[in-house]
Image 1 (cartoon, rainbow, N blue to C red):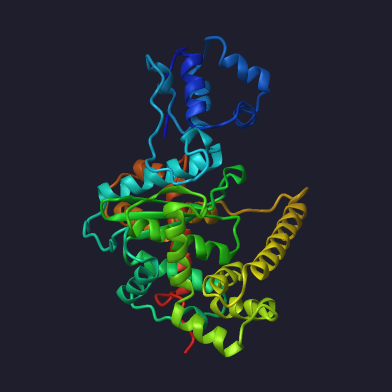
Image 2 (tube, rainbow, N blue to C red; image 1 turned 90 degrees about the vertical axis):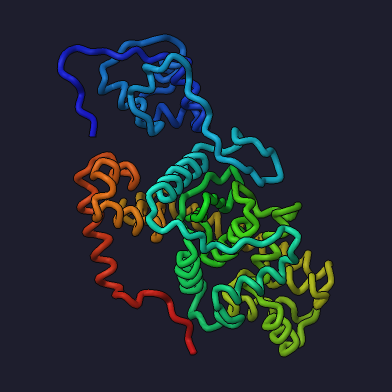
Length: 400
């Protein structure tokens, strides 16, 4: 925690450093002004002319970029952060990321790097597959490695429970799963990062549970072939490969064929049967329709018609949700948000290091994303209360 030194020490805000720092985070000027609670004209003045301010004010300005006031003591602007591979098929530039997604990537990388540097167990438990492997075969082999039968999802009560089950199972391999509200304009549904023997997957908190489940498996595909980064789940190159892998993990071919043959799927009943199979396997209807097309159970005309209807329904629901949120200020527990942003696996590792005094309370504050060290203890108690409530056997168990 920073304490301003006594006296009348002032700091000069250098426009070039302030502007570069904002641009590195891809934060628009109006957003920066809003965070500082000043007008956009006043903010632009900071980026146009040098200005002397108190250390407290300098620290307040730097903090919106998650930096310390000492940033303004630098001679030159800091270098742009490098997050590695950008797998998106359109405009593969880091500058294309909006500040919400950029912040999520930066925080995820920061936490991952810390976990790797501080973890006591450096065993790599994450399997690796050759990119040339057939995605269907890779899906089958991965299921065998983690001992998840083909009918597991069907035994889950709903998609939310299935998602929790897979998150817990991936955690056993050293793969953390967290969620952020990603920038809508970025068209990024998820991203993943890998470092030596740990990995993290960040899902878009605005997605449905079925959407998150597919994104989770898509990013898992990237991790298994060691091609992590930012992507939009398009159908080109490696993205198509990971889409197919995700589809075959969630919709195992053997079970899929059994279900469609049992229902006698064809173009005439594809709408009804795809809905039924979607509910059974806890995946989206669109994913089922795609597999029906790939396996020649329906023709492209039927697929185009039904998939267009699904996209239309999705957009209507999305608009309804957004409309329902207008004018409302929901009460959000900051601990819930912070827990989701860190992920269960990494949260446990940070607290283990904290309890074993391998990191100081100040360091724990930084890695947990808080501004005040006193909050760490309260957050620790809150997390502990959840564990006591859920008990040791909190993993979702498939129905027999």
